[in-house]
Length: 146
Image (cartoon, rainbow, N blue to C red; front, side, top):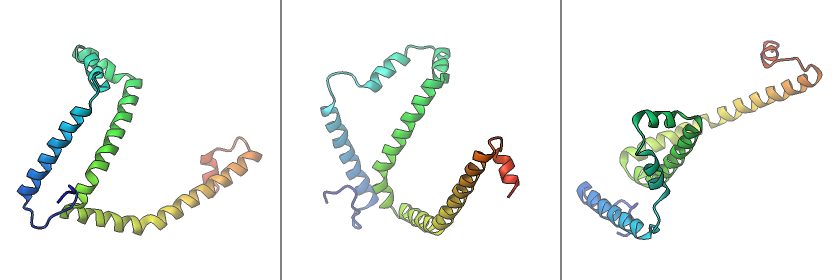
């Protein structure tokens, strides 16, 4: 079996784990071989932050711009992790079961979600039209008139 994502029904969980660990080791080795001679940006960031005291790190990590960048990184990491793990999760019984439940749920509420958002957009369009003739009108006042 060449595809990591395929499930062999005759493979025991221990055999699958051993095979996945072996493939992960090969993947990590390959990544280190491809690593450029210069330090990674991650390593450079760590080198800047590591010498700071706890108070200095706390101040840095409380900085709004740092927090914004950190949140962006977390989102990217989360997206990449999900992309990487999707095939593994889908090939487990528990993963398939919850994914099927989520698919069924999405299908069942999709129409309602579309309808509600269309109604909200229509209300907002009406509000925009009324504001043209009555610039002082607020959203709250508009909603009360309904």
